Length: 438
Image (tube, rainbow, N blue to C red):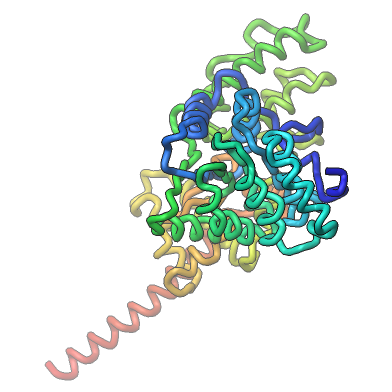
């Protein structure tokens, strides 16, 4: 197996020792998702060979993937895993993908070792072949030739972070009939447009049974975040160097509930808050106050969260100026007092956004295609994560993506003037026409 050389990337597996990798699920959280996925992986009678778990950015998808991989590893039901990572040049493309999986398969399913080794001996350059050839020679052929008949799970996390992700989906589904009795596939990603379209198409094929799980901010997700925050605040209270100076009421139930609400059930917000508050060189109650009041100090408490939002926004193919205009109106609509005389949320309807910004029908959804991990687009445009509004409204944090009330109100006012001009002109014409012929 040494022949794989640099084509095997250990940091892409679930069991690496990189401290920067996403942690596993906090004890007592994400229990229902882990149970459902574990039961599916262990059920030999389940007709679904593929499950797509998707959710918005920061919802804890990778933590679920790592926890599940550990559970199945302990039960000898894991075949391998690959965790893509956009900013790691060794983990953002298909180049090391097959070799890394094949190396793990040889360890988890010993019957395949000799067949994989033979394939490498016959063609020492196999890792430079096409993805289809690599998958056939190093995974499909060896597993079909082995004497192992227990279906094991392959976990692919962060597919949306792979440059040529559609090639991976194609090779999986092309080989699905051969691997039906050997592997199950769990594919985890953000709900990016091309991935979603692929799975929607696959679901229409009667020969390919695909299960889809949405990881949304439901009530259980809020409870999981609450558990996570309480446990970590307890730890800070017990272990912080300045704990002897803590006031007994430094942390209130109301403060925790406000943080839970702001999280929208997403762990990225909660974990970022804890990382900021637990700093040994400052007082936790002061830092908690910074968070609750959104008072920015010289050190940005949302650095990790901002980096995620900024990466998603800058990678969007939409015109950034137009994107800011859309987001400005959406944020402004959410901030309007509800007692105003116009119908609440009308401004962030896709129909009205397109009218205000002079876009063709469907133009709003088209501009927001690459933001599906942050934004839901139906009849109206809504943010998955409430802290996204906070980010956009703070010019220090969002920089060129900063949205302002002034910009939104100017855009709305211009639309109103255009509407008045058009309709008043039409009304004047009708009045003149009636007078002339009356």
